[in-house]
Structure formats: C-alpha cells, structure tokens
Length: 321
Image 1 (cartoon, rainbow, N blue to C red):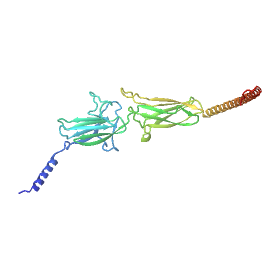
Image 2 (image 1 turned 180 degrees about the horizontal axis):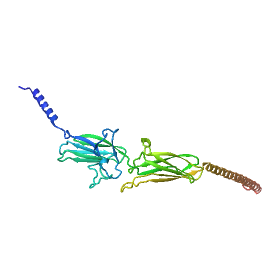
Image 3 (image 1 turned 45 degrees about the horizontal axis):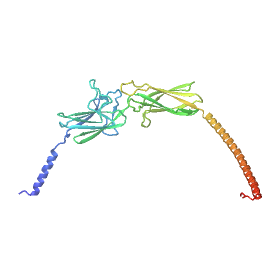
Image 4 (image 1 turned 90 degrees about the vertical axis):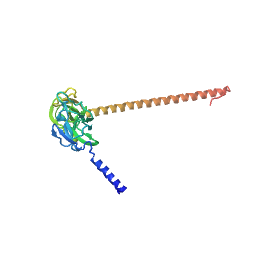
C-alpha cells in the first residue's frame, strides 16, 4: 500500500513539473537594436547610450531613430514602451507618410495580433540622456539614447551694457541648434569696433561639458567713445514650423569715464556739504534771534508785572505772583 506521505510527495512533484513546463509569453523573444539598418552601438547602460542625430530637418528618418525590433513573440502579445527625454513612433517617415519632430508620444503599445514581431522607433530632440523601457510579458528592459546637436541654427552674444575706459571685458558667444541644444565646435566670427579701429577674429565654441557650445573672448575698452561688437555665423536654412535661424547679433558697449564720474560725484558731495553748512549757519542765526526775542519778551512781561503789582499795592488790589 502506498502511504499518504508518498502520495503527497508524488503530487507535489507533478505540480512542480507542470509549473516549470509552462513557458512565458516572451520566452523565445529576441530584441535587436539598429540605427539606419546597422547594429546600434551601446544602449544597455546610461554611460553608453545610443547616439542619435536630432531630426534637425524636421523629418524623423531611419538615420535619426533607434529601431527596437522584437521577434519570436507569441501571437497576441502586447509590447509596451515608455520613454523619458525621448519620443516613440511606430514608424519613421516616408514620402507618403511624413513623421516630423512634432510626431510621437512618450508611451506606446503594440499588439502583435496574429504576428510574432513588433517594431518600436525612438528619436530624441535633446542632448540629455533618455531612456526607453520596453515591457514584454511582464519583463522590462531599459535602453538608453542620447541626441547629438544638429547644425548651428542660432547664435547669441553676452556683453555688458557699459564698461570702464581701459578695462578688459570678457564677452561670450553661444551657439544653438534648432531645438535649443548647445552646439559645440561651431565657427562664429566676431568684429569689435570703437569707431576708428576694428578687429576681427574667428571663434570655435567649446565641446567640453562644462562650457559646451560657448566661447569667451576679451575686449579692451578704449578711453572714449563707444564699442560695437558684431558676431555672425553661417547658420541653417529656415524650415517651416521650426525656430527661426539667427545668424547675426550686435551689441553696443558704452564707455564709462570713471575718473570723470568720480570727480563729478566728489564735486556734488562738496556742494552738498557747503549747502548743509549754509543751512546750519542760517539755522543757528535763526536760533540766536529767536532766543533774543524770547528774552526780550520775558523781560517785558517781568517789567509789566512789577508795574502792575506796584499799582495794585497803591490801590489795594490783588497782586500777581
């Protein structure tokens, strides 16, 4: 006779083997990452994201997107993806079906239906690292992407409104792509003029992280007049629906004569001191006059009081103390 203990053991073993034999919905699924048909470099770590050019021409093409191709799925499987600092689309642009930089969403679900594959395309408009979390059958894998700035679209100049004669001022130029990303390695020309002389230089914006997309240069302020700074560069052609290119910026810097300003301030202070002294003298004189008038009035009152009391005694009237 088989004992109850043996029966229980056999049942447990049978249940265990049954569970192990049930495959997951994505047990045979495989994921391939490509950009423009070639295997993507990196993508599985935040420190090694897939580099993607931003769609500066306002068309999301194969060259701009990371294709996440999932194969070997069970029919009816739903693949979901959620992106941060990136955008998801189910397909890239074709002549018949444009996909622009305004297209796409932050989350996407694809049902395989009777098929066994699913494709997700990821693009980005920022140079910040982005993520795409893909979930298949309850299992989630995160991939990393990062945009590379597009062609130079706009430049900016940072300069003071005024500066002291003889001083050296540090000015800064900045380059941006059409999405406002800082553009390193951009060539920007600068012309500095003070009315009688002019100097020109070509600047290249930095590519190091701390100062990426910017470049500083020094300007010596002359003794008088006004300094005019003009920066210009070759920028992208205007694209409908995108930010307007800015290829030239100018700034006038007024020259301050600090020695003259100091002398004028000192003269104004001296005049103020003289005025205050005159006011004090006038006040002191008025005080002396008022005190004398009070003293004279007091003496007159005392004299009148004495005269009254003398007459009061004479005529036996009440005196005043």
